Length: 389
Image (cartoon, rainbow, N blue to C red):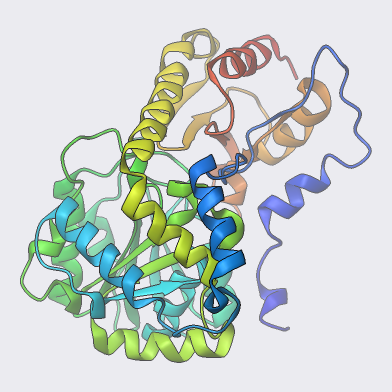
């Protein structure tokens, strides 16, 4: 069996295939809450700046440094130090072709064939897919209904083959924001065992908390343990330009550079320059984006009562996602397919975020609400409340 055959199809691709041949009535158009990537383009000022880059900067069309533009690396390092405290230098930052590449490169620098990475379950499906294709054993860390991982439970899973523990906060798929103390406990656990903590903060710009989500960058020698991942796609609506980042020890970036050079040679020059422009000009605009996402999050929380009365449970809600448990006597993958045809709703079942046979995933669904407004959230819940399988 090939490595690609060893894993499952992309849930996004698979779910889109459910729409083939389906006609949605005019009075019940499709509500698509299957994917979190921003649909709107970047703000107008950024688009103008990008157009000028394309027209006037010849370097936009050439290869750049494998680890990214020096100016962007320095700007992101300064941003992390400003927002989280501590010291972060440009040589601890690499720019990648999206945050998915950041994860793939980081895990490639850590793992040999058969090594293990602990993933809280439900997990971000691309993390599991890459592990399968790279010959890395995924060790599931089961979560209770709080959806907050337990460091003691993770400690019991560590073996001589364990190379990393992965945390995603705010979480995809659950939306849960991990408490600072939990993140620190996982850091301490990883450090004590000489393994890495891979901390994916793709959605950090939409965290509901005003205080820093963690203080790891202020710890001595943090880069010996922490591998921090980030995405510019969500912050500046740049998903098609594929710009992410990994922040860790320069020695690890030396290994990651080999991966990047073999995969993409360098990240997109246009995307990197746009991200740099965003850091320099869009703090106020990004704050407004965060406030809008928080309003939509609150609309989900406030509007959930009618569903709760019918036995639905809101397990997690934050950043771009709500994670819910349904009350029906069917697996969530079957329910999700039926919702497309019978309610004009496209969402992903929990079975796409958990291992086969996981009973929790069979009762759970992810709602990616970032691309629908409060009125559409109300309509989504009205359809779910009236739905009878």
